[in-house]
Length: 319
Image (cartoon, rainbow, N blue to C red; front, top):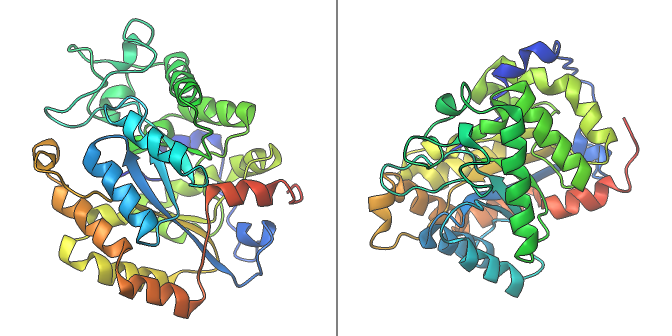
C-alpha cells in the first residue's frame, strides 16, 4: 500500500524552517547544484510472488533503482534469494506494522505476545494506521522494528535503508523517534525528506515541513537525507501511468527525489489479494517503458540508490 511523509503528528516538534536558498541535499552529497537525481523505488517486495516479479522486471529490464522488503510477509524467502544472487541490488526494508488486505494477512515478526498492541483479535497486524496509533506503544513498535531488521540480517541481508509501510512510523512522534534511533544505532539510512519537499508538501500538506527541525539530527548522525518524496503514483489511473511518470520526471527540481511505485507482475491469484492488481502491473509497464528511459537519458536525470547516498554521506560535511 502507498505510504508517504505523513508528518502531521510531528507538529509538536517545532516550526518549519523552509529556506528557498538552502543547498539541496544532492549538492551536500556531492552532486552539482543543478543536478536532478532520482531514486525510482519499488515498495512491497516479499508481499507476494507477483510483487517479487515486479521488482525483478523493473530492475533488470527497466529503470528502477531500489526496492524494500516487507519482512513479515510470506514471499520473503524468494526475494531474499534474489538479493543473494544479485548482491549489488539496493534492497532495503519496508518496515511493516499493518496487514491491510481482507483475506491475505500476516502477523508480527517479534511474536504476538511480545507486541500485543500491534495485533488484532485474529492475531494479525492491524489493517490500518488509524487502528495502530491508539493501541501500540513506542516500545512495542521498536521491538517489532528490531525484530524485522534482525530477521533480515539473520537471512543474510544487509539492508541499504529502512522505510515505513503505509507511513505508520510517521504517525506518532514517538514512533518516528524509535525509527530514527534504530537507523542511527545500526547506521542504516532512514526515509527522511528535508529539502524543498515540493511533492511531499503537495501530497501530504504543509505539516510535512514539521520534519525540518529533525533533519540536522539525522544528517549529523551520519545518515543521508533526500530533498523530496513523491508517493502519488499509487493513485494514477493505470492507463495514464507512463505518461504521468514522463511528465513528473520532466518537472523535477534539482535535488534527490524518491518516487514510489508498487510494481507487480500479476499471477492468477493476485487479484484476489488486492484490488490494485491492475495499478501495480501498470507501474511495471511504466518503469520498463522506452518513453521513460528516453526522458531520463535526454533530460540528464541521474538515477541513484540508497547505497550510493550512504557512500556519499560518509564523505560529506556536517550541517
